[in-house]
Image (cartoon, rainbow, N blue to C red):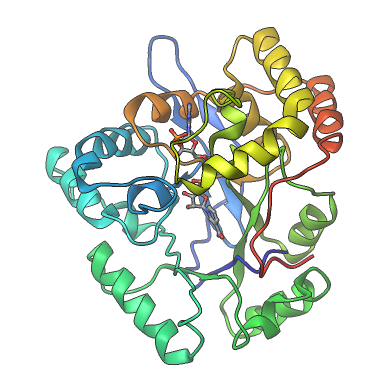
Length: 328
Ligand SMILES: NC(=O)c1ccc[n+]([C@@H]2O[C@H](COP(=O)([O-])OP(=O)(O)OC[C@H]3O[C@@H](n4cnc5c(N)ncnc54)[C@H](OP(=O)(O)O)[C@@H]3O)[C@@H](O)[C@H]2O)c1
């Protein structure tokens, strides 16, 4: 269970649980389906917005907002309502989207992810509440629909560290308070060292695993190699330099499976995460990436292909680093 996030749902939308990942009608765009997450429903695919505001890893600049909005519109049009947001312009994008559609039906009325960036300075209850208020302000909302704790620090790790063992207990405790757990957000990709324990723990607790960094920060897209790395000075450059040699076999398998099923490597990597019952939240920096990632739903990898990818993933000798608060 990650320290990175446990998502609490205070909404009690008693919607019927179903697992439909997408509806694709001939000649139309993909419509992402809905899946259960604790007592609520969420879209079967989400979107991470880290790159929509972060400079260090993603070279974000406000001049990118127009292109990011095009990606946002595409993703929203497809029915995605899970956006893992932090310091970005999601609230403005949603307002613009509603204005364009002449609609007042905000996705925020239904559900919202609210990720709070936990830094070392965010170790007191007050700083936690402050982060929450700041996020609400950015989202132009007045109350929380769903809250997500992000990266445990000493003050709240009592709920998270060792959470694999404690998740059930914690889940019961929260249920008693009428705040059932809806999802747990965990780094989950072909480059992450994982067994089924975490999935089983989520099942037992009745929550959905949200898989973050499903493309391993872009490495699994297949576009990076030792001759084509992120720019000098970007931390992804050194990271990929270290990870790529050990990932060659996996990337080869990904490429072969992608060719076999007529999809891209990114789509296969995301679909693999879906095949495990998770809701992936890939980042998309432009319209093209958004369209491609949406193409990861509406079809299913065969069991044999999943197994092949599992084997290749197990063979990666240097996995993606996990955040320092990650619960083992
Ligand atoms: N809870 C936590 O501690 C935590 C930590 C990390 C992330 N997250 C969440 O998970 C979300 C997703 O993870 P992530 O952003 O780390 O990485 P990711 O989803 O694994 O990779 C996203 C990056 O890959 C590239 N990309 C995406 N789609 C592509 C496509 N179709 N073709 C080519 N390149 C593509 C883009 O970067 P380039 O074009 O620059 O390569 C994009 O920013 C984040 O936005 C965040 O919300 C949470």
